[in-house]
Image (cartoon, rainbow, N blue to C red; front, side):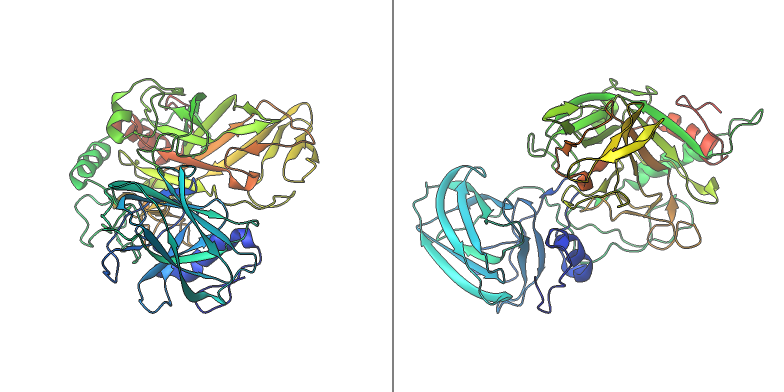
Length: 497
């Protein structure tokens, strides 16, 4: 385990990324997204050495984070690299000699494969990794290669016989002139997003500048102002009779299609993710945008005014996909006072859960699949991670998203940092002053399970996660928020009390 000053040693090697990310705070420049693979920016190196390619200048990656380095050149290095993780560098020129600056405190070691075009493309060379005496004890390793002329896409693929992190990388030299990749930037800024402190959703441009670094998607304030003006002008529907006083409405959904795409975490990279079960907008793919969602009217969700896309990792039982027979997407409020709840802005995105979290989930652990129906849970799978239900019950999962928002950003580098929980008094305040509908997925699978258990396309049960790409018609969403949430009245799919 890493114990030098730049690392905190967590109790479980597979949770190291998550724990250390918190410990490093602003020094971490790349946060893992909900689906584990992340597009990033190829920023110029802090030390602009001709021919040098900083490790953090990747165009895409899986499994990596950046941190301030203890190496003599300063700047940053890429760490938390384990078997199967990779870094991609676009539009680079490779000469006859490749050099890597690496550090490791893992006795098992491993290697870095340099490949062309893809993770399994032509192998240029293999750079061996052995223990260097510390995660910030750096050595330089060189290899002779024979590469095609011209610009190439280069993959650095991590290989090790065990699952723990085994190498840090500071930089490469490729023996040629390195070009700046053209992939749009989405790495996290090294500073936290600014605190905007309106008590309700902003109706004018924020006075505090938004975070505009890579990965922060700043909301169009003119569009938001127009949406809020329409919302504020709405007259709430009169409450008659004696409705259940729960702030809630819903979208009733089924699975529309499956793709190994993720337009939030991996935009523009078809097939780059694990398999997802998509709900709602039936045109969702790697190239989905707010405009494409709003233009396409086909959806597997009701009501028809909801053009949003929702997705979860696909579930497999004995190698066969098991699709939910239905998913209810609840829009509610868990706040004691829901009267200040605002509608979601067009194009709002967020992720809950962590596809990289691969830990056991025995009975009683957090992140549980559970049994809904008569008889409930009657046992556990052989590995202890999945419930076995009575024949009259079925496997179910409940995902809940945050209910407070920063009021400025439609998305953030980790797809989470622009949202957060209520404060200790049950109010949206501080960094997240705007109350938004608290979204929850209740997912029902038509199976009772067995001793064999299940597998998610993202891995273990602990990797369950969900994504929201919001694209409601403004009036439909606004009336539901005003009639159901603000008035604290339980509404159905069509917004009726």
